Image 1 (cartoon, rainbow, N blue to C red):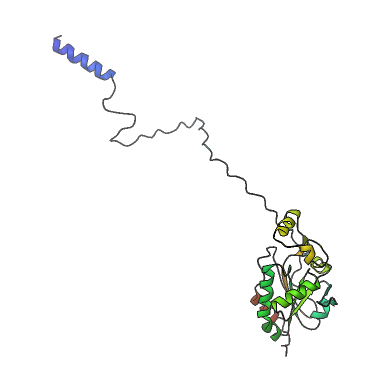
Image 2: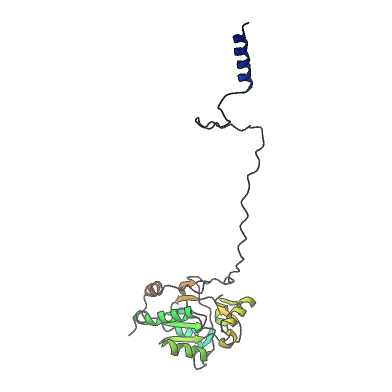
Length: 245
């Protein structure tokens, strides 16, 4: 074997021992090679994202224990007018259908707005031979103040014992935290309420015919949301009351 042949053989052996020239595990010019996973192997668990903080618990207002519905008879109860005289609710609907709205008090801006809406719609209600009646747990004196400030021309009455809202399944008691918040807002609820309690009704609106049967009902635990007056008036129109003079 010549010297040239030996040198050539040594170069080939060296080249083979060093592996492919200019090739990485990932080629710069060719596509990336993807290796299929071994089906028998157990994959490592994926890293989980940091757990989101748990939302703060919100305790909803207690639901009314008695759900009055369309077709039910309105419970009998007695309320007081601004002269502190007893008024039986049956004495009102016996004369003509009523739009009965239960509200929290004159200290509540959402209630005041809703009472004003009914004042604005009063002519439409009376033309259908019905009347508007509003009831709250406030004392007759506070009810009178609400009527005066709102220039309300319909019956606004005091559920002085809380029996009306209880009979209708609307009554609930504010918890200690909410009582503290109200005090911070300057709302002394026991001073406003005729019975000196921390009780309130869930806002509600009913249409009651002359036999005491409920023809429409709207109850919402969210005190910011009230019945649509036009929807209520439409329900009054379905009763077929004799138009008022």
